[in-house]
Image 1 (cartoon, rainbow, N blue to C red):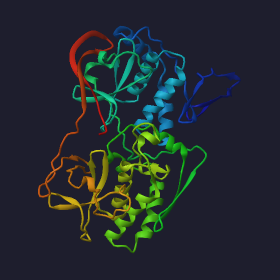
Image 2 (image 1 turned 30 degrees about the vertical axis):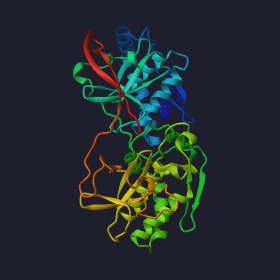
Image 3 (image 1 turned 180 degrees about the horizontal axis):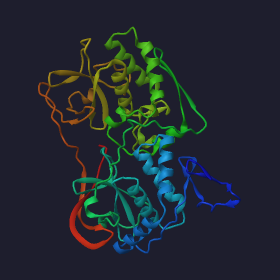
Image 4 (image 1 turned 45 degrees about the vertical axis):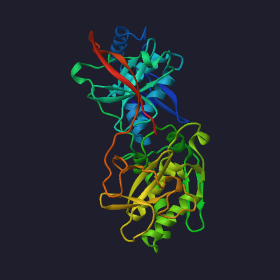
Length: 439
């Protein structure tokens, strides 16, 4: 009889005086500061990144008993409430632990194999001497190279990349057959049906008071470490994600009680003052060393944030507490919000979206009440983003029109396709590597 916990700890017991064969040892690996265990898988070493060698290595993995590894991942993902992004990270950290001293191409191949077996639509690319993962997302991701292939954007991930991205080629030695190419699940980066259940064993108590509104809450630093590693998305994704439902419910309950006797405009003003004054202001480059957008929960953990973070938090609070429609307003180098009020008729700076008037509410314009736009932007037509679309600027009396974000497109490259590990024929095609920017 074998008793397993999390696919990690195995105890071999005696049955009828005959000892059963011991299972393969479990692998211990690190995951955002935690030590996890998963079933061990005998690794395969690649001879090169070229098509025949990659296909041969993939076939070797297919001969391995990889079902216990997949079971370990599914159990860990369920217990920790991991969404698709963190399942992706779980597989990468497992591969790093198993192949710590191996070549980067060996780790990437294993990651690719495991993700395919978990049901994801991932593909492989290569430079002259390295493999890269091609990962599709349902949401648009910024500041990462991607390639458009068969009508799908695939974002590039690599390990110890050497060489030039201009000399990249794409291969698919992994797909079981041509008819299955691109049929796996696309990764979603939203937090909609998952609740992160990761504990570092400590909580940071946060206390915010602007003289009118007072909020106390606690956040686990382990959760914050995980969110720090998140891809860059558009602001709508952050404002609509619920990473920690109980945390958000606690904050909203406290605020709701304090706003109960206020009018719609007064409550919006109070929330605006709260977001403006309880956090210090600091650009991402100074605070994080790179571009970083905060989920709602992160704003209550960090002592400082910037205009994007404040806009996301304010939009979340106004929608959740007042039930009002909020749009994100983007000026060159600055982000704020606009609100469509229904029970009061505020005056101030704003714009028409169809027949509806949206009033500027700027969480980063310290001291400004609802309806006040920074003077330097009053003559600037902004780009407006609803919760589901990006809209182009317009005159006050006409609806805003949808537009496409601009991306920096690099030079065309040749693409090498291998449709199946059982077919070494190469199909010629061309594609484009692009780079998505946040602004």
